[in-house]
Amino acid sequence: MLDAVVVGAGPNGLTAAVELARRGFSVAVFEARDTVGGGARTEELTLPGFRHDPCSAAHPLGINSPAFRALPLERYGLEWLHAELPMAHPFTDGTAAVLSRSVAETAASFGPRDAGAYRRLVAPFLPKWDTLTRDFMSLPRTALPRDPVTLARFGLVGLPPSTWLTRRFQDERAKTLFAGLVAHVMAPLGGFATGAVGLIFALAAHARGWPVARGGSQSISDALTAYLKDLDGLVHTDYEVKRLDDLPPARAYVFDTSPTALARIAGFGRYYEGYKYGPGVFKVDYALDGPVPWTAEEARVASTVQIGANSAEVGAALRAASREGRAPEKPFMITVQPGVVDPSRAPDGKQVFWAYGHVPSGWTGDLTDAMERQLERFAPGFRDRVLARATAGPPELAARNANYVGGDIASGAVSGLQILLRPKLTLSPYSTPHPAVFICSSATPPGPGVHGMSGHNAAKAVWRRLRQT
Figure (cartoon, rainbow, N blue to C red):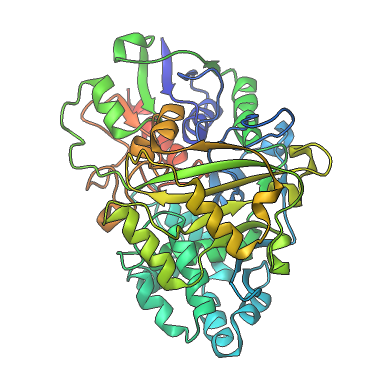
C-alpha cells in the first residue's frame, strides 16, 4: 500500500508529492493529461519552433515561493531569466510607469507627486519580505507567524480595498499600474483585501523580480517531476480518475483538482456547494515576425506588460466581466513577451507573445479583435507582425485544464472572504469530510499562482495524519 496518492500533476500536486517523498513516504501521482504541468506547461500552439505557455508564463510568485526556494530545482534544469524590467505599464502618450527591481526607479516612473508615497508604502515591508511572504503564504494554521507584528501591519494596509490604498497617490500613473496588479487575480478593485494583492505583486518584483523560466513554464513542472522521481516517487500520465476506486490503495489521497471535481470523485455531494468561481479569460498566443512595436521604450525591455489606459478603464473591464456579464469593449490585458530574455522560445528574429483579457465565466464569444485594437493603441503596427495566433476562450481553457471551471484561471473567485478562506470557511482548508482525503489545488490558500505553496501546506496536513496512523 502506498502512503499517499496525488491526483493532478500541476505545480501544487507535484510540490505536495515532493514534500511527502522528501520525508520518506511512498508517493504516486496520477495525471489525466499526457504530460505533467497543469498551469505550468509549454507547447507549440501556433507554428513549428514557437514554444508557448498555454497557461502561466511569468512567475513573480514562483521565484519568491518559500516552497520552491527550499527545493533544489535548479539542479533539475529550472533557470529563472530576468528581463531588464519585470513589468511595464504603457500609456497612450508613449510613456510608461514601471515595476522595477529598484524601488527608486519604480517611484520615479510615477512622477514627483507620488514617488514619496510609493516609497513609504513599500518601505516597512521590503526588508522583511522573506519572513512576511512565508507567514502570509502559510496561513491559515499551517505554521505560527515568525513576525506577527509585520504580518499584522501588512493586514492593516492590505485588507481594505485597493481603492483605499491608492488614495495615497495623486496621479493616474501610480493608480493605473496598481489597478493592473490587482487585476492579475481578476478581483474587482473595490473588493476586500485587494490592497494586499497589489502590494504583494509589487514587493515580489522588488525582492526577486518577475522572471520567466528558460524554455518555458514546462521547465518548472519538469524540474519538480525529475526531483520527485529521484526521491522514488512515481508519476502516471494519461490516467483519468473518475472515482476513488480508480486509484490504488493508499493511506492518504491528495487532490490537485477543483473542489467541484473532488466532490464528484470522492462522493462529497454538495459539500463545496458554496464555493464560487470567478470570471474567465480569453487568451491569445501569438507567433510574431519580430518584437512587439511598443511606443513606450520601457515596454520593449519588460517581460510583462499591462495594458489599460487608466485606472477607470481597468476597473470598467473588471466590472464588465465579473459583475455585468459581458465582455469589455476595451479589455484590460496582461501580456508576456518571453523573447526579451529567452530567444530559445522562437526561431531567430521571431517572438512568441502571450496575452489575455477578462470575460464572463463560460463566455463563448471571440475577444481577439477587441484585444488587438487595444494592443494597437500602445503598439501601432502590432497586427502587421502577426504570423499566426492560437485563441482560447473559457470553454477551450476548461477543456485544457479541468481546474479552470468556466475559464477561471484562478480556480475560484478571488473576492470576499474567499480571497483568504477557501474553499470553505474553515481553519483546516486542506482537509475534507473524509479523514484520508485532502485538497491541495489553487482553490486552497494562498490561492492562484505557480508557487506550490498550496501543495506545500497541504502536505503538512497529510504527513501529520500519516504519522498518527
